[in-house]
Image (cartoon, rainbow, N blue to C red; front, side, top):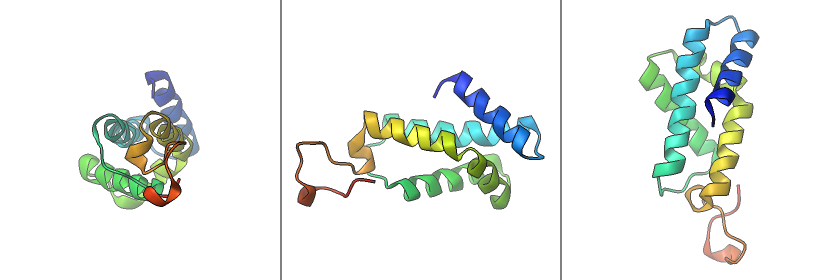
Amino acid sequence: MTDQELNRAIQYVTASTSYGRDMVADILTTGLGEMTTLATQSSARFERDVLLEYVCQWTIKRTGQPEPLVREILGYASRWLDEVYEEIAKRQPEALGLLSDDEDDDEGAEPV
């Protein structure tokens, strides 16, 4: 995710909620940053729901913000979270438990 895309997400969520830009930026930067880190450094397999829950919990702990607030802000940014997830799927399908075209469905996880 580029800085321009992150700024677009921050602007969208700030305009869609009553929260300040700094708070929104902190939560989105933390959540989307962790998701990107997982994409580039982890070899573990993640299903979409599990990955998004992990990112939510990570963001709550790192920012110290209450769970309902973090979930709401990440919820408004779901389009960007999905874009990052799709980018992970393209770059590292094995990290998401996705099969390559030449693998048998019985040997790996189901596609997400």
